[in-house]
Image 1: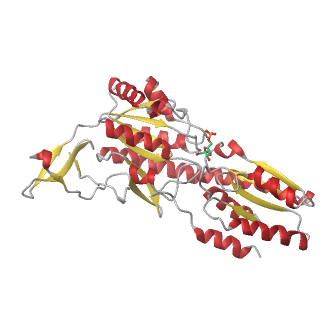
Image 2 (image 1 turned 180 degrees about the vertical axis):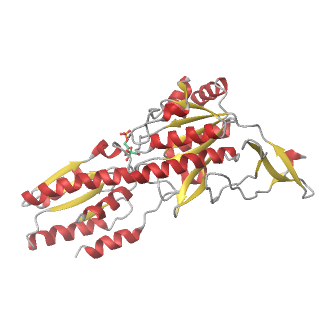
Image 3 (image 1 turned 30 degrees about the vertical axis):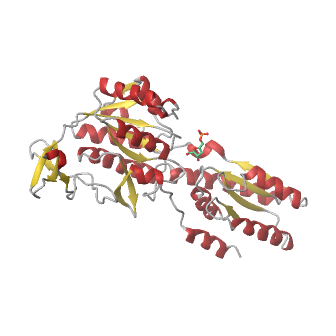
Length: 381
Ligand code: F6P
């Protein structure tokens, strides 16, 4: 009868200050009231509508990994996951080099002291990788065998959409729970306003462009500055606003090329010969080198330079907000696993912690706030 029972979800609130569930499934949790250990239970209804309890396998050991491009604040998240798990009497295993390390069994036990002194460090102490082998069924089978051998019941994945896609596929094939923490400087995940590392990267871009502006002004040059973000333009947009860039080219808006034409025209009329054009690497113009080349051909009188900021944007000590949010999300991820959640990403929506199902987080696009573009145009008089 239990097998056919329909789940009825009830509110789930516990220690980490967790609040909302967006589009996701909540699960009732019950404390035994003695040693703060949670017994995993779901509340279900049988065919006659009566509530019945279903005892879940008790969580004993979790794994934590970082995957995809590193992002400042990943270490803060590893620390929070590890310590929140230990505080809840769980054992923790660090999985090195993302899914590739999972396949190879590159595991290290993590104690509280192992994650001391890392909060302020950029990069990831667990290292990261983009694993091609994990995309194959054989690779995932090897990974599952390694997790079973190490008696890992659930995994916290700190990464971006590629990392969560991998987790989603494996959770559909094997009995392993995954909870994700969004970490990418691109800030392009659906369902969360924020991803770990974005704030630090934004500040790094602003610092670099402020310096470029000094030389641009001195020489009367126009700089095309290429900003990372993969297919998303948020980092270019917000850094462009923060730096007072003349034009911002992002994949989410095709109209921006007209802004560039306007600027170039206005540029010589007013003898304003210096300027910053922010170019998102994913913009359809094809990046800073390409668009600068076209501008040089059309306007040989202009002194044009290109600066590709590159991986400098991914490094550095995380700013305070990245540390705080990574810590909140790390605790929330462990809490979600204790609440028997699986295949969800923890996120921040209007500053509130939310759960977003993996299948939505990876399949839907994060949209940018077009109001920011309107503001930029308005001020560019
Ligand atoms: O997703 C983070 C990111 O830095 C993107 O902005 C960029 O397109 C990509 O990773 C670069 O990846 P890699 O370091 O593998 O070249």
